[in-house]
Image (cartoon, rainbow, N blue to C red):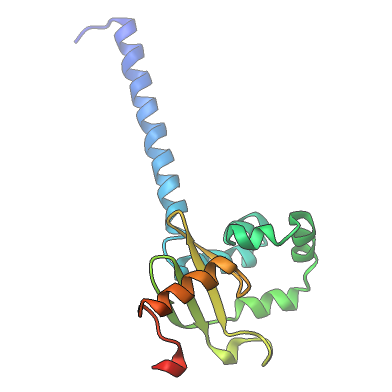
Length: 161
């Protein structure tokens, strides 16, 4: 093998570029897995609540949900949230994951893990560019997709089964 400094420099740079690409891909695959399913998004959301990471919490929400909020106000409310309320959110447990179709899904939470009887046991999800994001029952995209799923027979409401 030659000791040509130019060849050694090229080999060294290729090696470092390969390491950077490998590291970047590993980070991307971990991020992608955070939103692979409604369950994984919920776990990502819960972990972010536990760690107090409002940026990740925000990223678990759909664009529709985000557009209904003023981010600075939303962030301030999260940061000022009573620790007991955060603990209550972390106690929620999933009893059922229902992927209705490639566009929408929901999680049914165990009612005994909710803070009160008025709290909805459902967490709704919409698929945005291959990532499952938390949305609200007020999301028109979710409702339109649900109506289409019912019309096409992909989903039946509990009282229709």
